[in-house]
Length: 352
Image 1 (cartoon, rainbow, N blue to C red):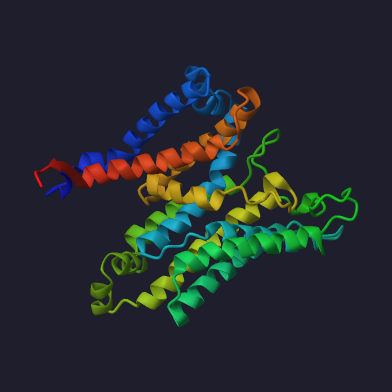
Image 2 (image 1 turned 90 degrees about the vertical axis):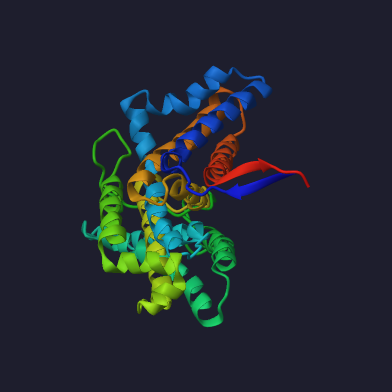
């Protein structure tokens, strides 16, 4: 009989090396997958791991994709370290995009550049508002935050559909379900001409530094983590689990909303039904592959954005379905879970 036994002392090396091993396993399975589909495995891996970094423009697009993933993952890391399972960051991302779009659509010829700040703040508040619904139901009615936050994603999608098909629909948009293109004054400032890179990248890197300080150098961050690891010990030490839950969800929602605002007022430039592309769900993988550490999540966000770009290139150049992006994301997550299991447990064959 095959049994799992807890290792007395898990290897610290493999605990941190597990994401790298998971990536290697994902690549190996990817080679098998390309061969099964009748495609050249070398060409397939080139599309996913070389094309996104082979030029300065490709690198800039890689960073553009990685920015929202990193922002959302930073907020989710706070939740997960607090043992609060926010699975609905996609909905908070959508509400952030809606809030930012609402402010951007108010702009006219006399609007000043300060509206960009209002757009960003509206996005943050939109995400926090959506996360607050989950926090309220968890706090007052002990509702499961996993189910509530996840179901609110689909409510957010319906709100988005209503707006772009109804009151915010561009009357000169040839009946397409989208808002008008935002005025130039409302767009997030770019870092360089000829590229879609904007100041969102700087905000994301500042977020990495800020969350590292918050989680590992402040009493509040310590209280959140203690509450997640040992709720009884946290209560004994005088930490409020209720405050920790509200803080974690609001911070997570705000970061997702910020990502949504930067997307619609940045690379996209308008609100469309295609704003939700799964960043909120992919950021969960980013958070865990990055070991819930702000610095680790920088690298995992870049890796995940390579999967996004590789999936798009595989569709156009290899004739493969775009859903291959989700396949690689799922492979990475399951490989990581398997590696983590073998790091903490060992297989033993015993007679029944």
